[in-house]
Image (cartoon, rainbow, N blue to C red; front, top):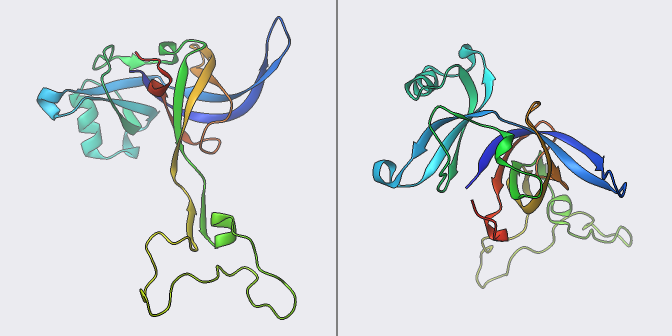
Length: 213
């Protein structure tokens, strides 16, 4: 398995030197991510690797977090501690993971948290159609009927209604790595990835595509 944490910078396009074809890519500033801990089934009951990301001042993290990093041989303070589940054969505690683990053409899956849009109605949240606006209609943007009458005398769970919209984690599968810049810690991935510009994203190799590491 391969994995790294980064920040989505935005989208741009790259051109093929021979054909001149433009490809839309998302630019991710990924790593370097120090390996804080390697979880094993014998010691922890599961397999995972814990990475740190975004170096900050010591005062910006808690004292237990500073102790956890120092105990595992990681110098400095980091804002994010992320665990990737799975077997990472190349993970060594104390060393850093960089964009060099991915090569052009690799298939990856990228996860991110979308923009929160607050409390929204059913038209924006679930793409409901609005009601008529003429002939005295009072059901322009209302959801309509949500339950039965005497039987079962309740509203079923999972009914599409108004509520919190956005701010959910989304994963896009089988994206392709176009280019990696180890000097500037940049990863160029074909197409769009979840989350807003400036948001934290999690990049892993796409296991479902048949590409394993």
